[in-house]
Length: 289
Image 1 (cartoon, rainbow, N blue to C red):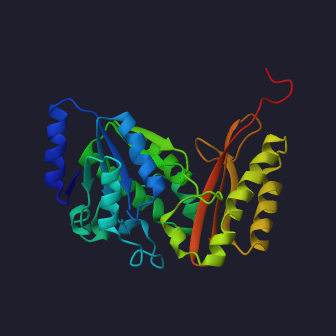
Image 2: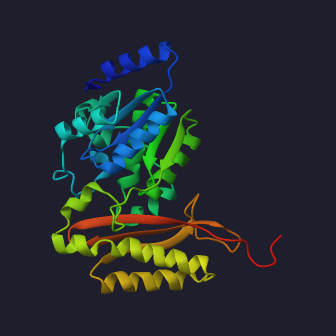
């Protein structure tokens, strides 16, 4: 596995692969890797002859009071993990390489609507930062396929819309969330949990799953289901940011005829903001043709 920091070195290596006719996959990350990230690399290797992962803690997706400065940076350990799963190239640029001018002077990419709901309500600049840095990475690597985890379903939907709207020739692939044995979605921010909070954290996934089961059983009052879930989370010591049932493809409130849904939640537990979601496929309504 090669590690490069300079954009010119990244492009030179990819140009060699392109001349050889090799398909390229990209896995964007912010580092502090866990088994979920490694699953993305493993899946990417099934889709392309060459794999590139980026490690870049992106300042434009952190708000003023968020954890950019304290976000864990574990490059040496990350490099070892990526090498163990057969990654070809790690791109680990400095902030100045990606944003050579002051951030407020740089071109930015905004996906309207999708960026301003759910997580975007409490993190108003977050998805603009995500869309901007992913657009830059797509331009730098020019991958045939890019692989993202489904834990942040909203992020995946935003990136798919961005790629479609900008006519970017890249296939966007989502990989199901990797979980701990007790159901907690793997996340770099899980390390913020105290031991007691860690024991309680799987309640988020359990609450999402219970809501999904009620939907599959025929309940359709989404507002009441979400309110019940928020009450359950609050009673368990969480501070819910949101708990919503949305249409899977565009995150709009579901209509009666919609069958592919996502139950999504974000909630604080101590100093950790946990996000998670579960898919729901509904059967056809009685009498539907």
